[in-house]
Length: 297
Image 1 (cartoon, helix red, strand yellow):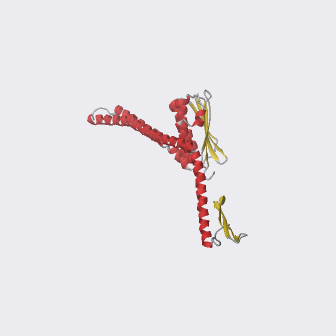
Image 2 (cartoon, helix red, strand yellow):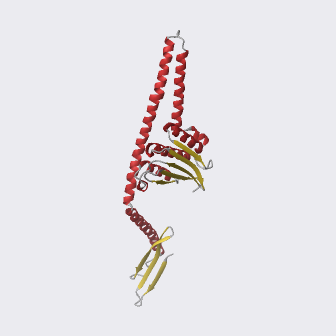
Image 3 (tube, helix red, strand yellow):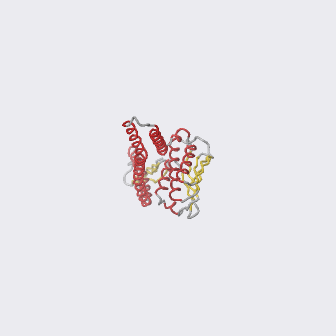
């Protein structure tokens, strides 16, 4: 709406004024007021149209100025976040390299050596065909069986087929069993949720996060018992891991100094997930994560 008025003062001097709103996204951010006391009829329709465009651009400028001021106030927070994200990227690259090195070592030391030994055994049998081969063949078969088992284990660690074929619950159950076998602590799993409701990307993310948290419990918590629980709460799926270990300073959660926890938090945030940590020195740690079900907000 444009308010336009044209008249003369007591002395008969012509004057004109125009008043128009400066709005942005249906929100009033200012008023453009112009008055001419020298010449009447200065505000023609063409000029009013031009002034309307100017008012619109001025509104955009005001909004940008307000936004810039807000950004400047949070510049330090943005700097800290930027530094943390750069650190996260660097740590991710290092983590990937460590994982590649671990896989290469497993392939070389366990599977590679075993297959090389089996090959040497077969070559020996071929060079001495007259000797009874049964005993040596059984040894070679045992080596090949172990190599097959090691290959399957490595395959499951990298990308467990059970996750893709049976879903998150059975995959977590398998993960807890494997952790218990390898590291000697008690790891229990409870599936209190209902299958389905998560897309495959989120299921994979939840599995990876739980694998990391179990590894942390083994490596850092000095725990004897770990409990993992999968549950459903309305429009969200939840995972809780609780250990009876040494815990840690809870201020690390708010400070965000731990790379592992920060990485998990950022990955969850990308899918609308949340993470809550309850811990303290010598009283164990409970970590609860939730993610929205498919199609839910």
